[in-house]
Image 1: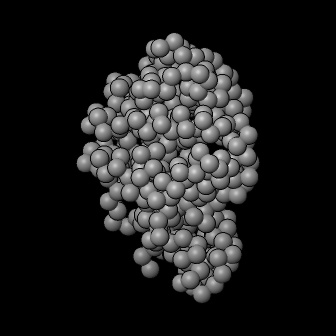
Image 2: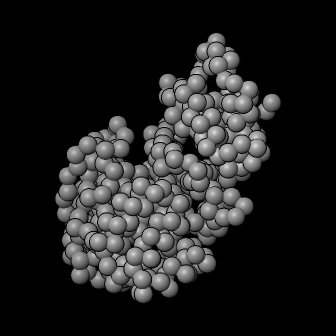
Amino acid sequence: MSYRVTQVRSSDGTRVAVGHGGSGYPVIIVPALFGDLQRYPWDRTPDGLRLVTADRRGTGMSELDAASNPAEVYVDDLQAVVDGLGLERFAVVGEMAGVAEALALAARNPDRASHLVLQAPSESLRDFAASPKGRGLLTALDGDWEFFVNGVFRSHNWNSTILGDFANDVIRRWNPEQCRRLIDGLMGLDPDPFVQLVDCPTLIIDVAGTTKDGRPSPSAIRTALSANPKVENVVVDAIDNPDYEEERNRLTYDFINRDSSRPEDVELSRSGSPSSHLSAETRGSTVPKGEPGDQSTPERGEDQRASLTDRELDVLRLVAAGKKNRQIAEELHVSPNTVANHVRSILAKTSSTTRTEAAAWAIRQGLAEE
């Protein structure tokens, strides 16, 4: 899919480059640390949505020598984007290091921001910098640029293809001084004043597998928002899950497209509390009728269930219980590769596109409780 680039002027006159892709309801994407509109996957833009993202000041196609202090200038730039484009209503999505900016933009526009999605808030800069791995990487920033960049990508559990391609591109196109200026600027953005001001439906997508016990890393933003009744929480496994990004984005856009007056369309547990039958990995995975993975016809579901081998049923029950491939392998005394092969077969036989959809199918068929 093609995209176009325009420019807006921020409140201090700074030029901000803005990328647009698709047509339909506007969604403002606040990128992770190394956001770059020229590298954004515009070909994955969902039908019916218009994705908008911008290069932060000092990076990419935006003005490179712009001031990075105070930290609120980054939110001013986003405000200039929505104002400059004349957007009366829009959704906001914050990716990892961008969650604080997304939170602030939604809070600044209570009558305009219809939805807020915070992807991996535990990877926000403040939380990341407070973690042992974050402190170590930030120490290396000024001394070993390549080590720092590759370490950031590995810390997010991104796959080897992204590591080899995107990381090398960042090493080539960015520099330590530029990155340090951006980090120092964004670190100064305190999300706390904006937390109480968020009034739109909000989805937090946490990442499992980032700690030794497999749980999401601690997040001050998640904790602060947990009491808000409009906040919903889902957990997606990033380890041994080639569909992680696809699942994360599907949950994001399903949430934005969902009619909030019909919450039964997609079941999401409030504030991270498990639903009675949904595991941590499958919360939020109920598929609207007509979508891939929907097996609303009983006869069809029975046929598909019959096509699964006993071992595939064992694997599917563990997937529905939120187990990762390596955990399933240990429990069934097989190799992770064998589990991966079973999962691929299960996806094909249940007409599911991701393991989350397969888990939802298992719950509908009553397999998760057997």
